Amino acid sequence: MAVTADLSAPASHSRPYRLAYRGARPEPTSVSVGDVRFGADSVAVIAGPCSVESRDQILETARAVRAAGARILRGGAFKPRTSPYDFQGLGREGLELLAEAREETGLLVVTEVMDSLDVDLVARYADVLQIGSRNMSAFRLLQNVAETGKPILLKRGYQATIREWLLSAEYVLAHGNDRVILCERGIRTFDAEFTRNTLDLNAVPVLKQETHLPVIVDPSHGTGRADLVATMSRAALAAGADGLIVEVHRDPAAALSDARQALTSDAFADLMDDLRGLSRYLGRPIG
Image (cartoon, rainbow, N blue to C red; front, side, top):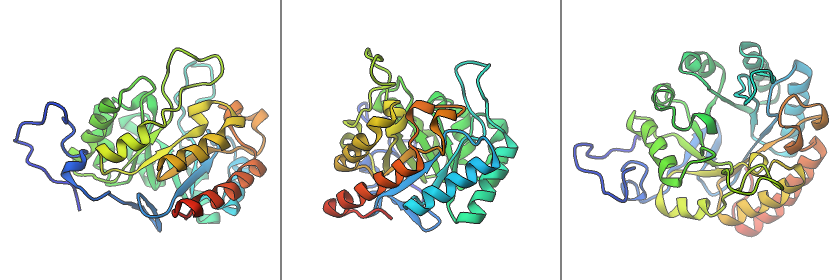
């Protein structure tokens, strides 16, 4: 059921995101994707490579993350890169490979939509549409993905406040789609010497108070370092996150994007074993 509110009424000065605000729906929203639920009593784990690079690469990685316990496969078919000379993704071929991986493993698929022109194409292949950090404030794109009715994974902009992030979610909600999953992925601060971003885990409990929407954490982009992913994954669950999205590559050193932050398949399996114990202690099993 879609969130409803009287849009003719003036918004509160302190709560302009009237549909995302917890006051609009006091009970937490649970977003279902197939048989996976975000915001329920369990923790959902998304895993896979930054980019779909080849058939062998995505299928091998999909099998590995499925065996380790992930429920949703991530992988970029269209890649927003700072340099125009970096690998930009395989496009439609990448989407077809993701669909093949889903068919073989049963994993659901999340992938990024970069442009309004690609919304219909990506929606034909993906189970969840991701809006990346660079496009968090691309309001026409948000409106267009909302109209697909698909679940939307909305990453926080790397320079965005929580208020700005929730207002971006509001664009999706206001277009009749309440299947929004918020993703904290780190913000740019004054110290970039040791980590790629500052992973703002304060945002998790703040959002739990401020909004009814489910919240997941991306410790890979949040740190930019594979050796920190396990620690920050545990911290995210302890802070109350409803899920994780983790980068995994069969050979991180050879990855065409985000090599430094990707876990090997074995490291991801170890992480999942570790997280199962923590999640049982927290009363929210991984599922």
